[in-house]
Image (cartoon, rainbow, N blue to C red; front, side, top):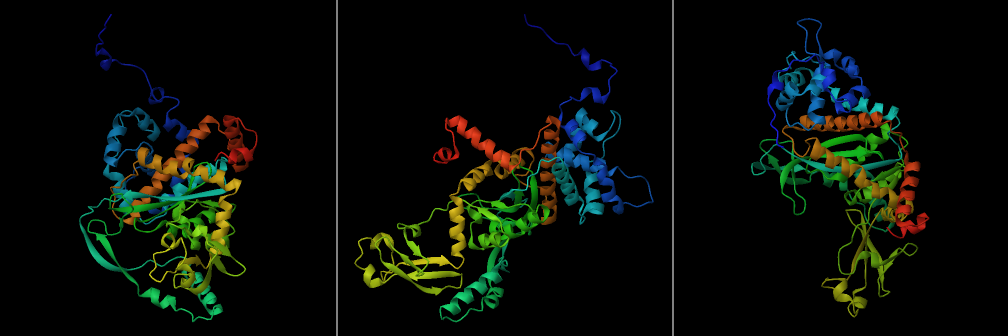
Length: 478
């Protein structure tokens, strides 16, 4: 039998409190129980005067921002509209039914007049991370690195072209010293690379709307102005640090600073996990210098007869081709690569010549970086049991963080312009994500699993699914 509902309930009177209307399992209750926002007062105290009329509580301002980022609301204007009608949000702010919510421009004015160019948001991020550390949820074994692009608030068709200096490359001085040392050993003159590097110019596209963004091009993807959020996290998915740069800065350029920043916070980190974009000789040399274990993936070589088919003889410092011909050392290039060249007289009659090289003089050239021995060690570590299982966790940690940030917390694009504002936006998104995870885990009474346990549990779980008994059999299926 069909029934019809009437609307008399709209005018019903009831004796209720806001607390009665907020579900016990609502996220705002978990956050309120997990974090005491009183820590905000001493941070912002210096930005307020002792004279004049009372201001809006700074904790209210920060909580409004967290409501926006926790629930993926696109603007502060829309956040205020949501708070007006959402009982849970009012409860979180401590507002009654009758109290008027601050105007949407209030936070923006306070940001410009008080919070801009302060360390408020970095300190909020650090405090939340500290609570996660105290709860035992943050591990210090493995560091996962990656970056994601945030679309800038700029028209990609409106730009100017300018000649700008190339970015200074990290560890360039050490590389130059090694290049010159090896050239002198080989009887060659040394390079004066530093002077040449200072005058290098490159044409770049500069956005008219947001000059601090970078023109981003990668493969078949859409070309656009963007920013890059270079981010590091640990095994449980808590974000440890982030650095925001223009979108045209390569991952490997920022990785050095990101690792140093994370290492200062957590000195016990012993392994760095990253994708193929970070697999460069400079970065591997940097990790080795810090006694950090690199966990990097396989990089597919290009060409018909790939370099991996040539055997390097360390004792004689030469390469042997698949036809047992020797490629002797020739020189060290300005880019830091040792060149090994074949004998054209022997190559001209080789049955694999057309597949091996397209050189007019029938000569094959193999290059090996001056830090090639470190790259060989990184490749050796890639094949170890530990690295295989650690690298698989990237999709559960750093890749999931970026997916959640973009889908649930509004980080796919930014409405702000300028590096400082975008960095603040990104920092608050990651602070909200850390807070959400911390509050949820504390509410569940979750006990942390550190890497030793997690490693063994992962092995046991995978073995039981496949019906096998040990790690060796498991790795044969990877």
